[in-house]
Image (tube, rainbow, N blue to C red; front, side, top):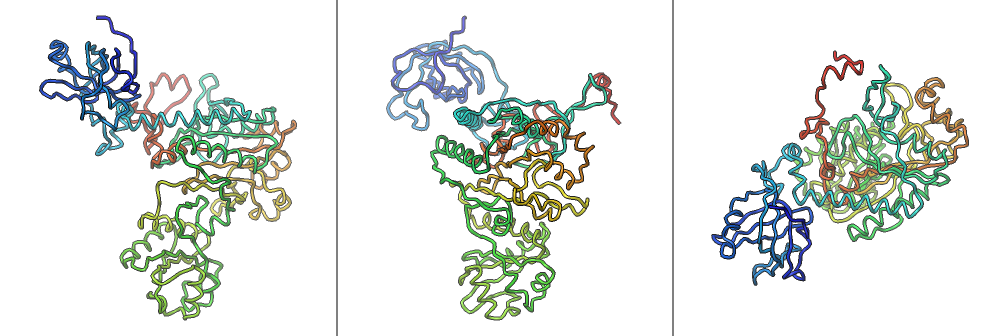
Length: 587
C-alpha cells in the first residue's frame, strides 16, 4: 500500500480543524486499550495528538492497531473530530480534538526502550547518554534543543541588525598556549607535525580586526583538554565577538542589549539596565569571588582593624602577619546547631582555611567559646561593622587574603544553599572589571596573565608595567549571571611595543614569541586598529535561561566527566594502518 504524505504535525490540529481529513506521522507514545476503543498518543517534535481506532467502524484496522507497541513509527490517516464532553485534555495543545483513524501504516517497529520516555525520574545520566537518541526523543530534551535554536537565531538577528559579520575561523590551527591543554591533530601530509583544535578564535579575531572587518561575531566550536564538571565540556560552543575602534563601555552596552532581548523575548523578563559593575577588588572583598551571586545577601565584611589587638591570638596573630579577619552575618542564624557549625568549620578547611570562628549574637553580648577574649566595646564594634542584631550568627575566617576570600566565598554559597536562600526564579547580572593584568606563580616563580597575554593594561598603568607589574590593572570585563561566569573579554593590545613588554614580563623572549604568536605579531605591525571584544559560553547561557544545572542537558551529544561519549564509545582505538600513515607509534 502506498504511504500517504504528511499533511499536519502532531501539534498543529485544533477544534477549528474539526471535520477535516489529516495524515499524521510519528511515534506511538502510549497505547491504551479500553476494551473497545483503542487510543494511541502519537508524538512528534511538535506535540502529541490522540488517535482513536474504533472496532465498530473498522474491525480489521482496530485489530492491526492492537499489534502496535510503544515507539513504533507509524503513519495514520483519519478525520479530525472534537473529543467527547468530559474527555478534553487541557494540558495538550491538541487536547480538544482527536484523529479518528481510517488507515494505519507501520513504518518501523521498536524494541522495548530501556527507560520510560515520558519521564526522567529514576533514569541515570549514564543510561540517558548511552541511549542519547532516545533521550533526545523525550519532550523535555526536545524543548531544550528547540529553545537553544531560538537563542541562536535571536543572537544572529541581533548582531546582523547592528552590522556585524559572521566570519568562520579555522578548526585546524597552530598550537598556542591559552591556559588549557590543546587537543592535537597529527598531520599525515606533514609527518611529525600537528594541528591544534582551537581553544578559542582569539588570535584570528584580532587578525580580522587588522584586516578591516571592524564588527565580527561567530557562534563557534571550541576545544579544551581540561578536567570536566557539570558546566564544562571538552568541546563547547561560544558566542565570539570583536569590535575595532570600540571602548569597554560600547562592548558592555552591546552585550547588555543582547541579554535584554534574550531575556525579554524568551522569558518575558525585563532586565534592569545597565547591569551593576564591580571592580575585581570589590567583588573579592564583598563576595570572596570574581563571580558573585547577587540573588541573596550574606556579604563579607572585614574586621582586621577591630581585632588587631585582641587577646584572641588567632585573630591578632593573623592581623600582625599581614593577613585578614573577615566574616559573614547570617540573619536570624543564631539557632544554627553546634554540629552544623562544626560541619561548616570542616567545609572551609577544604579551601585552605585553618578553621572558622563563630558568635551567636544575643542582647547581652556574644555567645561563643571565644567570646571571653573580646571586651564589650569590641563586640559592639563588630556588631556595628556587620550590621548584626540579636538572633544573628557571625562566622569568621582569619588567614591570608587569598585564602580568606576563597573560603568565605564558598562558605557564603554553602550557607545560602543550606538555608534555602537562593531564589530560582530571578536573575541578577553584573560585570566584574579592573582585574589584575598579571598574577605571580610562586611555584614556577614567574608572572602569568590572569586572562590571556593579549589583554591590554589600563592606559594609566602602562608606565608601571616593569616597576609594579602586580599593581597593573587590565582593561578586562567578565559578565556574571547568578554566580556563574557567563563570559569574559577585554580591550586587546594593538601596539606591538606594549605587546613585547608584556611578553617580556611573562618571560616570553623574542624568539619564543615569534615561534608561538608570530603571525599575530607580524599582523600588528601593519596598522592594527584599537580593538576589543568578548566571548560568552552559549551552552552556559542556554542552561541558565532554561533554569537547568548542567550544560549536558542543552547539548545534543555531550561527553561525560571523563570526556567520553557513551553512545559512540569515543575516544576509541584506531587501526594500526591509520597510525602508520600518521607516523605514530603507541608506547
